[in-house]
Length: 361
Image (tube, rainbow, N blue to C red; front, side, top):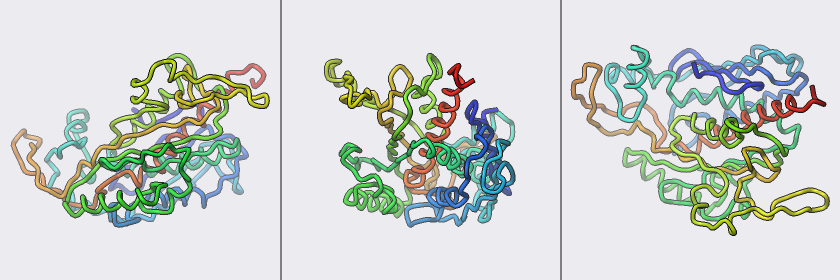
């Protein structure tokens, strides 16, 4: 039913925006991994609502509770159950749209598919579901850290404000030093001002999150239909509000000739590298050991604090009024979500690569 992601490192999420709790079941995590709960909590803090003036003011601490699969601080190889209890639901904020379809939301499609829908904050379609992904992704990141793999996502665009510098020229650690999570301090201030002005206009705006994965082993990815970039694309496009995914040179690459775009190989101290990385660290759907980098486009948040015309379940024309607490721009809180989903993909493919070699079986 589309609630499980991955094959060997598998994650199933459950829960709704205004239900009692959200959660994740992580199955396939190798036994003996040291699980640092504080690291999970830090990831949850990066995603939680109410963290600044440019995010939703819903107050959720997003405290995690590990129910199973961890003993004396280490994974046991059995399913790891994690629960995140909801604390600040205001379901009454949605009673006025109980039978109305909000523009650009999943209200209509869920109702047509299931014949019933949880109108309180969108239920299962709410971006609050991503809290469970971040918790699960933190475990994947801890597993991958033992292999030297690291993830560095940041906001590279808000509206028409675009960070033009290549990521290699940026100190990516600076992304956590400001509330918009842009590693360029000057551009960060401009982005914050733009988001705040949009918020005061009772409107929303979109943006782009760029992610860089470093030290990925060579050989991750499966031809033909399960290429690494295809799975990364699926992972990113499964995130709420995502409208686009590109990796490596992406759409800009069409402006180049093959002689400019080809990544030549060189031998540096006995290790093969590419002279450029237009391929984005993936060739033939398989990682080549270079940095994997990609961009994820997020649309403006669909809920706006303005009246909009729509229809109700009877097909009658109605006015939908925006109420509740919502992000004016989702990208600052989307940064840890992008990293989490990328980590789930890489962890899964790392385990798959071990099963593909006779000497590992």
